[in-house]
Amino acid sequence: MSAGFQAVQWNRAKIHYDVILIACVAAFIASYMLLGRAPGADGKIPEWEDLRIQAFGACAFLMMSLILCIGPLARLSPRFLPLLYNRRHFGVLAFCIAALHGYFVLDWFIVRNELPNFWTELVNSEHYGKFIGFPMKALGIATLLIFFVMAATSHDYWLNVLSPPIWKAIHMAIYAAYALIVMHVALGVMQYNFSPVVPVALALCAGTVAALHVAAGLKERALDAGTQPEADGWIAVGSPESMTDKRAKIVATPGGERIAVFRDGEKIGAVSNLCAHQNGPVGEGEIIDGCITCPWHGWQYRIEDGCSPPPFKEELPTYRLRIKDGVVQVHPEALPPGTPAAISIPAST
Image (cartoon, rainbow, N blue to C red; front, top):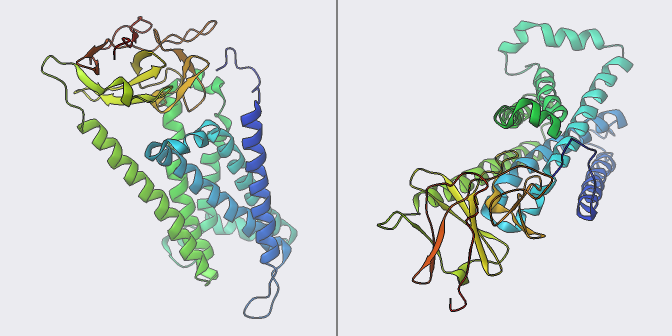
């Protein structure tokens, strides 16, 4: 959490995440360029300048694919939740790699005094009606522009200025960017590189992204459809013993609202599943230092009343709870944000 948009404070986990991320990127690019120096079928050894462009482009595409896999993976299994914590770092680094790829392409044309040809390719409208010879660089530029807007607005300052709904809508453009980059590869690299590695890698990455999103969507749909209220309107959550300590069970109301029911030792509290910071899935987080902690950006709330600890002022709607016949139940009607509603588990339960 932050109050006043101060510089990011790296903790041990963040440092480890960033170091591993940068090391993996460096290893991928170095390995690509070294292995790419092997002679081709025609006996020619690729130039370093060409390999540099290919390596950074392949790395950017792979990073975008992985970024889009993190969300559904975290919904399918809690073990992937730690990947969500610094996904913003992942995205900004991916933009930097993509920007370097674009710079190296432009540099290739400048060094060879072929910049006019680069511009002609972009502005010649006849090329856009072709499959073979389509100006795939235009797709790359469009992708890079979308990526730039997302990277430039990744700070919480812009989240506050733009408002969470607008900010989230802007960052959903990553799907448009991914579609463009897939077309960039299909209409570009595959037109002159006839190795089966390229189409196989493209299909594998794009297919994995699509499959994971479909699987996560089916699981989310089952969650929304699988919760039925009791005759008096209360919704069964489960026995206290079935609830994992420091974690939440998520239930859905008949109206489709999701409620995160957390257990912290002998205490149980229910809050809205939407984080006040960015509408993140609070229920996929955990209780850290006595506070419910959103997995997206670490926003925290007390389990007792859904209030952020001082000096922060964010609040979540809470829900009434009861234990009936050994089963924890939650009422689907939300209480005003910040209303105390947590209960204690009876000693006999």
